[in-house]
Length: 529
Image (tube, rainbow, N blue to C red; front, top):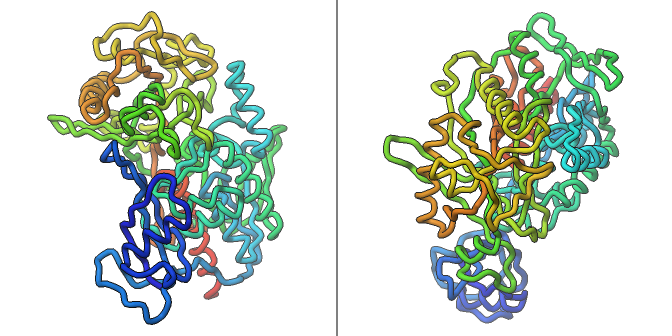
């Protein structure tokens, strides 16, 4: 077995073509290749007239074949598997939250035999989707069942991107393999830019729940964490509030906090109970929307190429004076979605289905913010900063969850928009044309204006006059970090802050991997008792 990298194949190459390309790279005949498996596939669109894929493969070569020495040929090293021992405990662990971190922590704990209780303030994904659809169609917000809260977490209503900056280790491999078993397309195991799509995510989340339940785990929906029960600096249980307003206590010496980046009432509760928390830098801005055909033309050289889906992009600029901006969570062929979770506040996000076949492309255009912007050292200052922006957006949008929007050309000229151009807004319940400068802090506006002009030099048409900005994007990541030690525990022993909400992840894959790491720490602690 060997790994072969940097193999060039055509856009429509089949298995026979790939085998021939491998043989050519190795300078052997195809009959010497017994088997192969794709481990990476990325698009190379640097040369518009010769767009191709670059792949890496693990392949089994017939013994005795003479291979050339090449930097693109490596010895195959079997990856480390994520396997936990079976353990037992007098009390069932509690996992608070069922987003990527909570799901994977719950799955790993279930596989270890611990039968966790998974508390979710929102509803199961099927009912949640119905509530989200009602909000998008009517503007009627359900504060416990929305884009932020409910089974699957905020990532359920997104593009389902699985790119991550963390190491591709046994944790990431376990995450991707479980996603495939739950119904995600198998290509996520090897694509350089894998995505699932919100339509597949809804099915996948439900299947992971079924697997956890088959292993003895238990979901309790519409159960919101109200407070931690702590004695002698150790967690001994939790108090939850049910949908009818009644309260219930659940005893446990192990609580995983996978609460997500928008559980603001929980952040306030943790602060009041003196759980160590610090504020954390994050980013704010707006969603920028273009016609997908224009992005395709900028990236591919033409509006459509057979064998290629919707083009994406990822841009970043560093401006004079130290300021910078970047695009985040780019959704090809997708929609800008209403993502509010609190009454009287407007939030935007981006979403694509697996096919990525909608008319528009969108991405968050973001600028980093920190303590100097919050003008406070309070641990929750970033959260209050988010709320202020979202409240201003609600008022400017018309107090009915419409979002303020502005043409890019008008934004660059500091003019209020009056009419739409070629790009029609995909955001529902709808937009109110105005000036988003009334929503975002002046520093953010100034950096975004300069960044758009600079990004247009990298991606032709990015600054097109009738491209559309819809504001605000405030939930790029958690505004806090819940402190933990090398065992993943808070100062309060038995309490395990986890995932994006706790400040230790930045996306579906990294959050899910963090959930696995926390579960591993819990299981290994029990295994040596």
